[in-house]
Length: 201
Image (cartoon, rainbow, N blue to C red; front, side):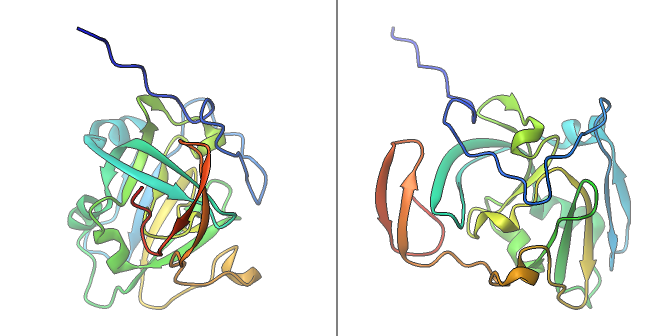
């Protein structure tokens, strides 16, 4: 019986490494993810908590506004599960994500966290996420441009009003919908026409 070839990690797939604010130096013990704002229950999740909660796997693409796209199997916690845990108030309409160091933030509509493949990921293709790719925990929104998938998360806050984040303040679209465009498929090493929305190929 033939054996399946191992999945390539993100380095092997030659996924570009880019940190607008500079790659952070994460403490050896990892980080803590604080979840608060307009919620019934505020929580703080340490690395052990995040790993214990990382029971969901989704196969989806992360797509950069610079026009590359990579498919991976992301393991973590579905965002919808976190929403259920903290119980946002009726006034909560947006969610702000903050990366380690506090320089990089981005805000999405609360409804985006209900996407069936939106995940707080701690691993990709069977390997823990290195800091180069947003470890120890990052957001993955397959339906939005990658600048909404904030890396090395330390805070998730539920808000009433929209707040412009790092790239939005520099002219990027607030809703980050992926339009019809040509994209470079890192898995297949080819450029394809994408019709818009979540990348399905």
